[in-house]
Structures are given as structure tokens and as C-alpha cells.
Figure (cartoon, rainbow over the protein chains, first blue to last red):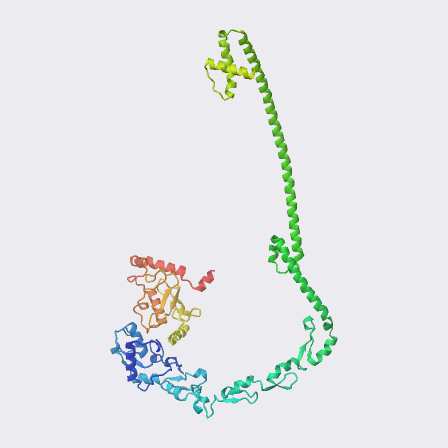
Length: 416
Length: 157
């Protein structure tokens, strides 16, 4: 779109052709972009290019007799070789300069000077704007030229005198460029000004230090921070301060101030230690912003918390010891019961054993007295009774008569 | 690249556009991005609906077409689920002599004259060809449901 875009071969061909045919007098190296010009009155839509919506620049007509700026149509043909209006196929050869009438009409449109923002109020027909900028516009930067000076200066500021020459400031004797002199005066330290308080003339460089000590300058009382509302000229302030009660109390205020700050520091330190000791209690405190009034209540809270915790633990302990006693009782009872049962059982066993022993005695006596053979049936009976003991010893019962006999005799030896 | 004068001119002209049922306003501070509202054309199933679109002017506009997309859900054979529009002037038939205003008017015309023979949403186009009345009823239903005026939505709320 923009004329600065790199032009293709075709594009350059067209613009070369068009420039050579329509505006041969147009200077080629121009930095003035005619598209950016502002028109004094809104241009007629019929004189505007359908592509850029601005008045034609270097108008070109297609074979289908539509008119465009030369740059615009060249750019459009790069994308599609049809007329942007009716889509009829066209090529470079189908393009020709628009009628002189159209070119004249757009060239006669009145535009503002491109330097209007800088202050130029000129309005000129568009085809003259380049000449205006090149030759007459006072707001264009040009070479100074006086005495071979190469610096740039606005054309309407050029004169016989070179503005870049260094001149001496008559007040501070500093060397300044002629054109910067006005700006320099605004800040020149050599120029004197009136002190607004004592109306004496002072040089700008001395003025600052003077204001610090000017006897007429109004200053607040030195105890204004402690509440004295008095504002008086400096020369009267000494008298005021000798009677001002705020000034008299200043040392007291100061002492209090330092004490308060010390206490605040200490308080902060203590709080930090407290936080370290009871980190759980700090959480609700962190939500509150005011520190001082919260202090004691936080402490109470913590103590209360600890006390209640202790109470909890104590009741827990009581409960536990109680249940422990109960458990012990239960356990003892159980133990005694069990013990008694075992004792009874033992008694019963002992009697049973005694019974068995008696029987055995009897049997042994019988065997000692009676002959061996007829005792067999009796022996069987004895064996049956003895079997229980044999099983308890882990041995295997055997039905063989001889084995039983042998064992019997063993038993005899052991038990009796 | 600075903003071409043409875009500024078009924006200015669009601001003064009042009675054609199209509205384009610059979105935020990007002068190439527009919020668009198109009223459904009278006599179409989209009548009474206000459709929101987004329009973006690419770097080489007006040499290449603006990118336009429906943001409002619409039941139309040439507009797909993502809001993309099948319209020749937005693709190969673009001409630099066209402008935002004419593009939006063309889209409005497309709402008035759906073209199921060149579909983008195949299912919709199929429906449109098989049973045009049912399809139009669906379009009307969707318009009622999705393409409300902001003021209407406020009233309901």
C-alpha cells in the first residue's frame, strides 16, 4: 500500500511510465508523502481512489475505464489481475493515464501545509505543496548558511545573523548559542530576582541560600510538630519561642517520645519471644492488626488455654487411674476364681491318684499272694486301669500281655 | 507499519453508520480489530436476531480481505460451528475496492439468502436441502435462543 514498500518489477514499470507521462516535472527525490496530506474541504468521493479512499495520486485508468492511483492499482494487480471494481481481467498493458481533467481536478484540491502541526498556516493547491515546502514554507529546517554555518535552522528564523554563534550572557557571562539565549534566561543564575518576602534583589544563585535565612520569610514555630499552630516571620519567631509553652515542654515531649519508642521496641521483642513460645496462640493474633491493645487479652487467652489444657489432662488422668483400679480388681477376682478352680481340681486329682494307688497296692498284694496263671483275667483288669497313665506319659498302649507285664513291673519299681 | 489512512477513514465512516443494521466498533485499542453486530435481515429465519462477529484487518488490507467470524451461534449452511463464513468475497473474490461496510452488508445478505449448494456446514446444508421448512424452523429456534439483543438479555435477567 505505502509508496515506500518495495516495488515489484511491474510496479516500477508502471510508475515509471506514469510519472514519465503524467507528471514529468515531478521531482523524483521527494520525502513528502502526498498520501498524508490533509485536505481543507472533504474531497468529493468521485475523486477518491476506491482502493486507498484518498484523492487520486497520479491517476491511472483501466481498459474498463475505472480510475485508481497508480501505486494502488499496481499493488492490487499483484494479487489479482482483475479490475477491483468489476473484476474484468486487466494487465499492465490495459492501464493508461487518466484524463488530464481528472488529474487537474485532484491536483487543484487545496491542502494544508504538511508543517501545519508546527505552525505553518498556509493552504495551497496540492500540486503546489511540494514547491511550497521546498521553497517558501517558513517551518522547514534549512541550513543556516551564514558564514558557512552548516547547522539546521527553521527557514523563517534565518536572517543576516547566524543563530548558532556563541554569545556571552550579559548576566552570568557564560557563552550560549544565540538561539538558546531565551531559554537560558529562564534559568540563568546571574539574573537577579526579588525575594518574595523581603523584596530585596538577589542573584538567582544566592537566592536559595537567602530564603533559608530571610528574616521576613514566614516559618512555623519549631514546636509545630508538637502542636503549636503559630506561623510568623523569622525575625519575630525568637520572641514567640521564648514565650511559647510548646517550646518549653519540648524536652518533656522528646523524652516521652523516646520512651514510647523504646517501649514499643521492647514490646515488639517480647511479642516475638511470646510467639516463639506459643506458636499456636499467635495465629488468631496475626489476624488483628492493632498490636498494643491486643497484648494483654492475647496473654490471657494463652494462659486460659494452657490452664484449660491442664484441667483436661488432669481429668483424663483421674479417669484413667479409676479405670485402672477397676481393671485391677477385676483381674484379681478373675485370678482368684481361676486359682480356686485349679486348687479344687488338684484336690480331686489327688484323691483320684490316691484311689488308684490303693487299688494298685491291692493288686500287687494279690499277685504276691496268688499263683501266676489264674491271675491273668485279673491282670487284664489291672491293665485296663493302668492304660490311662500310660497314655498320659506319651507311650503307646499295646495289647500284648507280656509287654504289659513288663511295664507293670517297671511301674512297680518306680512308683513303689 | 502505521495504520493506513484508509482504515481511519473507514472507521470514521462506520461510526456514523446508523440505519443499515450493521454496527462495527473498534475493540479495545487495537485499531485493526472490530466488534461487529449484524441484525438478521427481515423475512429471513434470522429476523429479530442480533449476531455478533469479530473482524480483523490483516497487515496488507485492503490488498487482502478482512478476516471475519461469527461469535454468535447460528444455524446456516454457509457458516460452520466455529463461526467461519463461506463467502467468495472473503476469499478468492476479494477486491481492494471492497471495504468493511460492504463486507458486512454481504454477510447480512448471505443470512437472507443461504446457499446450501456451496456448504460449509454439511449437516446443515443437507437438512436445508431435504426439508427447508424444518431447517428454517431450527434456524429460527437458534436465533431466538442465541442471537438476543443485549438489552433483551438484561430485561430477562
